[in-house]
Image 1 (cartoon, chains in turn blue, orange, brown, green):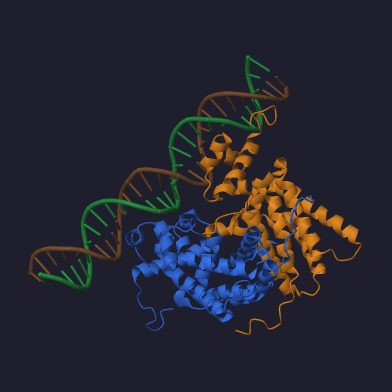
Image 2 (cartoon, chains in turn blue, red, purple, cyan):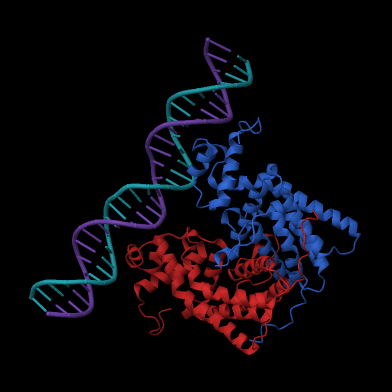
Length: 226
Length: 226
DNA sequence: GATTCAATCAAACGGTTGTTTGAAACATAC
DNA sequence: GTATGTTTCAAACAACCGTTTGATTGAATC
């Protein structure tokens, strides 16, 4: 690890962020204590409060550091698609790929958080910590607006409600997968698949969500058949 | 609440289980303290340790009480389908419906946990608390084996690996939905849909997961195109 | 060289956690 | 009525939590 001059003696704040990032994704926010963080970062216990103010603020800090590059990339990918489409709708598959490719790029670049941050972000979306509920959204406001618009355009046969349902399902699958949550491991099934490699995940994930999103419209009044 | 003689003065252990069930789903396991539980159950603080031994054991107790009826129902639903199919594969849609119908039955029967338990169970599957990682599986061993076999039979064109991936994605969406985790609420999108009604969830969920599971086989060597 | 200011440190803060204790209350059996 | 065993109770337990304190360090400024 202490190879060349790679990251000889990093900034204290950065070391804290790195340690917190890894520990939050491993144990979750609440189960990660200040002592664990400062011990791993090899800094004094008081350093977190000195540099960030509080544990909650540190949590935010972990995200604000990484989120901008990710959202820029995702929006940029969509920009390119829409420019090439010249006003025509971009296919659902391309839209989903654009989003996941951004995540894959980050996952393969340790300097922008690598796979650890992708997993942490995904896990955070799923578990919805109250700490981030107000502070996070504005970071990706543009991203959401753009992708929502693009999918609505690609799926004109779906009304707003059904589109919301399906996007909800799709991103549930996406974030669970990227979070490394192999649900099947809970079941006795032996885990043949390596659910931790983001690229491999995307390979199987895209066809699944595309099929789900483009499925025939749910019959009106369905559910009344019970 | 204290209507007729409905549940006049419940057993202490039962009152604890009910309180814990509701609080765990509302705040999560770690964020729910013994004081919160005993206060809501209107019992003494020491009662939990007296009747259950520990907080972890109480967590297990909450599930063991409810899980057997649910799994029985799910297996029973599948039994009926397979009997009617007379050796022929049961369709993916029917299989998924069989599983969700069991959850819906529980959700509409307060005596077997109601919607609260369905949400708690789903949330627990997603978050995968270490406490339950060893104690839970044997409860639904049969259920998993039966459903895994049925889906494999219904989707013979998928190899074991791709089937595992897709089941993983499908159940990610299912449990997230039943957990009441509307991922979209995190995004600025105004929540038009009521993501808490299990029956409504199932209406939109079934077509989505069926389409995802029955999507064309992912091309071999996919992912190498990067 | 004295001053200033940000950074680090050991130590302690008040509060909450899950758990344990030993006495009191209760019901049941003899 | 006495004895027995179970359940409830207020109180305290040690351990950990996030945070604060005040002294100490080190480098930059005048």
